[in-house]
Length: 465
Image (cartoon, rainbow, N blue to C red; front, top):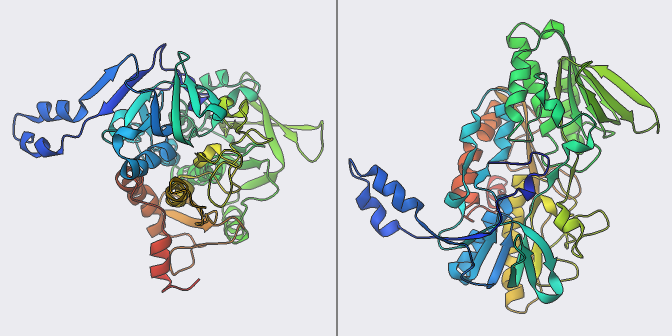
């Protein structure tokens, strides 16, 4: 399903784009679910019209990217302008719920439960252009796709995610052939994490955090806590030296949760090294080489028995080379309303943007609610008034049955939903992460019905800040 693990947002999909329009089948679906007719029902549910040439070259709303933000906004825009006026450009046949990969890498969830066919998540009636975008031409309000075909729009939503850059680390991605190396950030390598953990013998178990923005900044240490717990359960903990090498100067960017995590690493005898960035993996010697960011030109080399790699990440190349990007290559949007700073009919959501908040699915949910309101006002020639406060969430899994639910805003201040201290490890928060959130993702967020927990937060706190 993923042909290039190093650049996941820009996966190849063939030479010519295909156009799919999902057909609504609700009136007949219930009648088909009778004994002996399950196959017929499945066929009807998956029925689509496809063609090698687009039936339309113009859409009122064009969404670029079929990840979390793209599918969510497609559902919301369908209700605003009608399904026939919305199209989504996405090359991949498979859509993944990536937050669950933390648990896949720890052997707690199966990988095959994390993905579904892209056709099944795109809103019914919305046109799916199965292609890859090659160029933005915002001055003409159009984009060019794989075969050079031009598709114009009235409004454009950019939701391309980010790209993983394993190749920026010398020795990778070919180094993943070593059974001792894994990465929870790629569908191709997440199961390797679990194998490396199971095969752990004795020595260093190293977990890395790169010197770039990343999606789900808590994930690199979530798998560390789970691995430590697993080794304890298997009686191997005394033979393991757990090491977290991070490029950051702190363990977490929000002080409340950083303090909680520092207590955990101290209690579990985990070694944290700051301002170290992985630059090379030598599989023949089982060595990982880190640059010392506070001492330019100097490096430290560690032996590893297990190595979990969080790769460098960047905006997709198609954004970086366009006029839509900021100086660092990210989509340049207003942090309050998600409208592009130069082009008023272009909007952004999710990981590809330069919003100064943590890149998570929870952030996308909150952004989608604001962006929907922003676009509605722009469509009526009014100035956007609703403001995104930077809300994001990171369920910091600290064991196979515990979690610290971090929620915060642009100012790195806690913005907690529940009326109890979320800085403590709780079993209830783990089950919310493992069992409730996937359901919320597939059946509420992607349907455009979940805009984050703000209403619940107000209810829980009785309207108080």
